[in-house]
Amino acid sequence: MALVLEKIVTGRFDNPDAQHISGYEATGGYEAIRKLLGGVEPADVIEMVKASGLRGRGGAGFPCGLKWSFVPQVDGPKYLAVNADEGEPGTFKDRELMLRDPHQLIEGILITCYAVGIEKAYIYIRGEFVAPWRAVEKALAEAYEKGYVGRDIMGSGFSCDIYTHRGAGAYICGEETGLLESLEGKRGHPRLKPPFPAVIGLYARPTVINNVETLANLPHIVNKGAEWFAGIGIDEKNSGTRMYCVSGHVAKPGLYELPLGLTCEEMIHEHCGGMRNGAALKAVIPGGASAPALTAKEVYEDKVTMDFDSLAKAGSMGGSGGVIVMDETTCMVQAAGRLAAFFEHESCGQCSVCREGTGWVSEILARMERGEGVPDDLDTLASIDPNMRGNTICVLSDACAMMFEAFLTKFYDEFEAHISLGRCPLGSPYPAAL
Amino acid sequence: MALIRFPHSGQEERFEFSPENRAELERIIAKYPVKRSALIPALQLAQEQEGFITSAVMQGVAEIFEVSPMEVWGVVSFYTMLKTQPIGEYHVQVCNNLSCALMGAGRLLRDIESRLDCRVGHTREDGKFSIEAVECLGACGGAPCVQVNEHYFECVTPEIMNDLFSAMEKGEAVSPIGADEVVTPALAGAEEPDGEGQG
Image 1 (cartoon, each protein chain N blue to C red):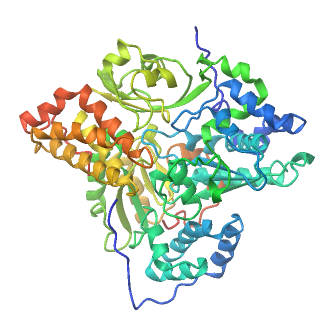
Image 2 (cartoon, rainbow over the protein chains, first blue to last red):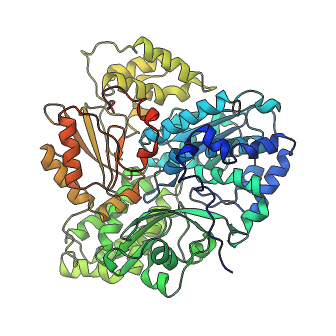
Image 3 (cartoon, one colour):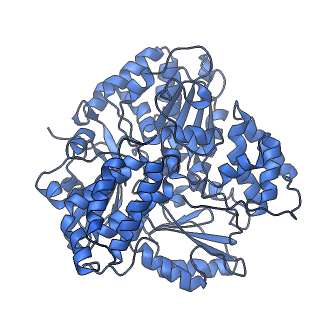
């Protein structure tokens, strides 16, 4: 099946006027919510989104319509928390969505709130993103002024308030229940699940949590139909496009909106200009730091495709769409050590398995890179791995274990060489781990 | 998880929000059905006002939210952007996560340290600059990325940073480099007049 190369959420990126409400309206903006408020039943919107096959673009890839349908139809307030706490290493799409097309996000929020019966939405934007926060605030002011947000929107009787909330620097607040805790003014400690946020979420009320990119797709699905969306991508469960955030050793790093189902090889060589300096590919992290790395063999021989299910089958995941490409000059011990240090830094510390596990993994990998590794280290790492999985409140610990297991098993010789040689065989001049 | 001690000081004066910030805080509190949600925004406001979070700030904020100062400290110590030590007029944050490391962030950091004559994790004696190595800033396509106060600078080299630092030393306004550039001039004009805000 030939994949349709169509820009959906980045369609207005080349049009600087789209940041303003007039430019957004001139390009079909706010038509989707107008259509819904004109007489489409909320339940039909949920069915439409289910039929489109839209899956969450934040990390877990959970079907969006299904997530909405878990919200009980009870009296009293329900909330939408928009996850704009973009922090997964390798990911930089939500930032650009907020900078370049903030009204698209606002319209996606309105559609969600209308479908689920929500009157208050909070956009949780990571603290470092000052310019994107300003862009969203400005767009919200415009939308309030024009009556797209607020009381009795377009005379329909539907009311919805949207607020921004700025984070203060903590990766774990991108975990949905950590985000809720943070939004409630506390330390961002993830909550034990169940109960899931759909039932007991923000202020113990039913809450939907969606990623920025997920929401940005909604106006287009409403305007063009579920069938159109399902036709883009490789199959009905991997439909639409993704904003692939490509970084590292490619000739043209950057943001690429491509249909789900493209091979990793096509992405690198046909869209990102190939490898930088024509160097050989060594490894690719396909979905943010938490996604296990793929080898060059998996990319070129197994021809792994970049959709949710194919990556899961290959033992990795689509995650957040952060694609980190590493060439032959990259030391795998150093790369794994750098990410382990990140997970150690970002562990919230609630669960001892994660707090201690990430620390030990980071320390062992760092000393291996310094040439101070001992033969037992490889067995120690292998024994830490299973203990770090399935034993904690959230999946940060699992993500760290999945990350280093992939590096360790796929590049075992390189880890062994660090120990037998007593130094990094690649002689990396600059230790990444600080 | 890093252990940070409570910045206790018995001699500090009471902390009060300026009238403008107090009004801004009331506006923020009104956004939420539960007041506590405004605790972190309140701390961010206080940091803007005071430069960093002192024990007096935590006690003052605790009174407003009717929680114990230790409860506030629990929150402050969790978030990396809430500072309990003074930072420089220009706080230079160098991303050192994988994508930036692959593009030379390690060498860049060392260059910046020697250019500013300031070690990472420290504030220069004259208070002009501080340097921090940070985790992913979310601008990996523009690696290596450096954030100074609120501005992002993407795809930087030691030469570019040198020019930027020279401008900062002279007190000249600097504009972001990379995706942040797309925000309209009017938006950029919403900043403080000197072009740089604290923290």
